[in-house]
Amino acid sequence: MMVTDKEFQNHHIFSELERYIKFYESFAWTVFSFCSMGTNAICNIDSYVYSSIQGTLESIQQILKNGRINDAYALLRKYHDSAIINVYTNIYLQDHFSIENYIVEKINGWLTGKEQLPEYRVMSRYIRESEKVADINVHLFTDDRYKKIRDRCNDHTHYNFFHNVLMNDNAISLDNRLQVLDTFSSDIRDVLILHLAYIFFLNEHYMTSSNYLDSLECGATPEFDSQYWVAPFIQAAFDDLIVKGRPDIAATIKQRTSMHLT
Image (cartoon, rainbow, N blue to C red):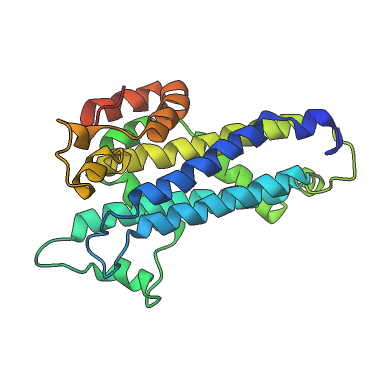
C-alpha cells in the first residue's frame, strides 16, 4: 500500500479530521466570551486552547496526507496532552477559585509565563482523583484503552520499534498501512471523546446556543428557557461522537446537565 493509492487518500480518517477541525474552530468562538474566573485573562483561556488544538489537527491532516503516520502519532500525543491540560486547568480553577482566592496563582502563573504546569503524570492523577468528574472517570477508566493509546503514541515518538520507523516512509509499500490508519482513527476519536466528556460535564454553559445572548444584545426578551438551548454543532458532535461511541458517558452527561441535549 503506497500513500498515493486512492484507497489510502480516500480513507475515512480525512473526512473525520475535517469534522474535528471545524468543531474546534466553532467551539473556540462559542466559548470566547465566557470569563475564565481565577485568572487575569480578559478573554476565555480555553478559546485559545481550542484554536491551538484546531491547528494541531490541521497539521495531523496534512502529515497523514503525505503518509507520515509516525509523525501523526507524535502529534496525537500532543493533542492528548492538550486535552489533559485543558481539563486539569478547568478542574484546578474550580477547586481553588473563591472570593478569598480571586486569582489562582498556579494557573495565572502559567498564563503569564512565570510558572510551568505539572508534568502529564501529575495532571492525569489530579483528574482521576477529582470528585468533580468522578462520574465521568468511572466510565473513562474502566478499561486500558487510553493507556494503550498513550503507549502507541510513545512508541511512534521514540521509535521504540522498527515498524514505527517504516510508518514515516511514504516511498515503500506496506501491507498494513490502512490497518494502522484504522487504529489511528479510533485513537483520535477516543481522545476527542475524552476531552469533550470532561469539558461538557465541567462547563455545561459551553454547550449553549447563541440565541439567548443574541436576544439580549438586540434588546429583545429571550425566549423562555433559551439559556439552556444547545448549539447545533455541539448537539451534532454529542450525537455523532459521544452517543454513538460512548453511550454510557452520554447518558451520564444528559442526566447531570441542565442543558437541553436531545
